[in-house]
Amino acid sequence: MADELDELIGFLSDRNPQVRSAAVDIVRGLTGGEDGLRALTARADRALPALLRLLASAAGSGAGEAAADSLVNLSQDAALATRLVALGAVDAAMDVVARRGGEQPALARSLVMLLVNLTHVASGVAALLQVGDEKVQGLYVAKLVRSFCRSSSDSEEQDTFEYVASILVNISKVEAGRRILMEPKRGLLKQIIRQFDSTNQLRKKGVAGTIRNCCFEADTQLQNLLSLAEYLWPALLLPVAGKKSP
Image 1 (tube, helix red, strand yellow):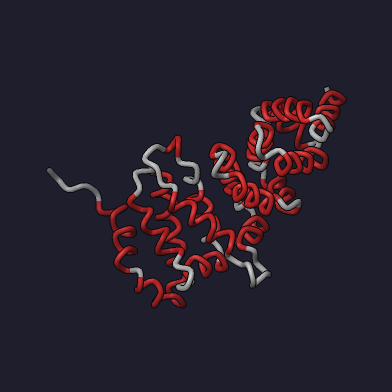
Image 2 (cartoon, helix red, strand yellow):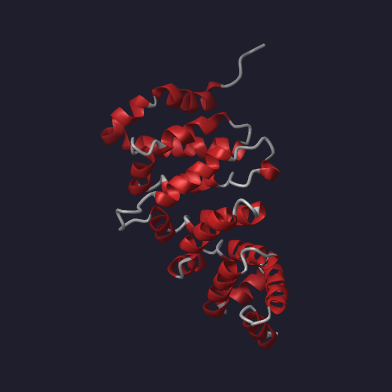
């Protein structure tokens, strides 16, 4: 079994696209079970780079979606998520979403879910915020917020970017993330708050959590928060208001 799995991982980098596609479909199936995840985790040094390469090179095919799904399942493990970040998974995911998201909503949805898992670890948050590069810092976040606010859907099954709500909660747990979201010139928090009216409960819950996290900056960002009062207070108060008696 070990030799067969090693051979399978090797096929992920085969020159023949049909071989790569067949191999990644099998890998996706393996990541759906504990035994398969355990076996692939033991071979993460080979499996993770191969899946990322396949994601980038085959994003326009079914193999790209299978690679993305495999990475989503593997990245539920914090240690593997950290290794993926070090391999450039955040940049790879954002690049593919930008290039293929409109044509392949299922692929974009999987990659957003991958980013949720990656932002559960500190290095993933820093990578998504682009900390350390002032020229582009916050650009990824702005792109995700734009997609999040433009793609609202009444059907959760068709909502490609609904999981951006969870990413926003993750990044707003750190000061750098809150500062980017609350920067007046960007206007990101104002856009996000408006999504509180969505019928999608994942969106609504994520927006509420993001707002609560941003309120930790009230001592230094009070003026910015007050400027959003028209949108902010309803979002904060409605979850605890309850229903009126008949």
